[in-house]
Image 1 (cartoon, rainbow, N blue to C red):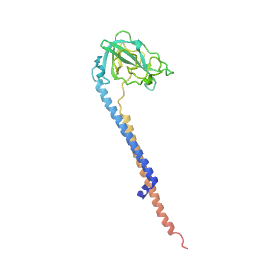
Image 2: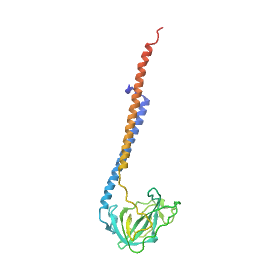
Image 3: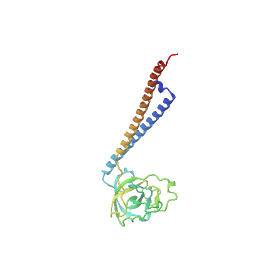
Image 4: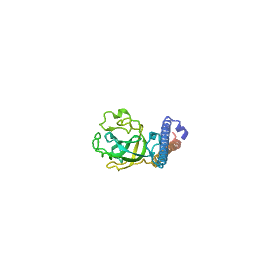
Length: 250
């Protein structure tokens, strides 16, 4: 009785829906697996980069790989300090503090760390001034994202949307890159250094397995309801002849 049921319009439509759902769940699972692979590859690249000795600032620094450890000595250009908005940390909204550091071999933007936002999202929080005199910064080379000009229209003075030297004050800094500070001498005060990214892929793997389980549930549910309806129709077909034969003759 199963095959006749599958030829009915109702079960054809239901089967098509189930197939679409299973394919969608499979694609979502594959996407989560790819995300897990990206995280795993990113974690390995991060570990490999962090294992390198720090390099000095040069004009070719931007050609180095992301997360390359760097060591820079120079003086901060405090008047050009700028805040990058909408940078959450530990479930709190805040800003990145970007200050250019002028070294003998060039100027580079330094992400000095994070400060919490005030209740007014457009207000700039009070930020500690950078250390005076010669400062030695140890940190990691980061690729600056390409800023969208429209996102910076109408922002308060001293705020930008992205840590891109193209929208930061013009201080003749290295284009397309900045340094994420890990420590400095003299030490920073009042600013929280940014943590390194997590490379744990277990969450994506868990999601991938969950989508596969959902696909199996959809497949199992389709077979369960199909079998149940087939058994019900078979039982009804057996009862009907018995009822006809038991009817009194006239």
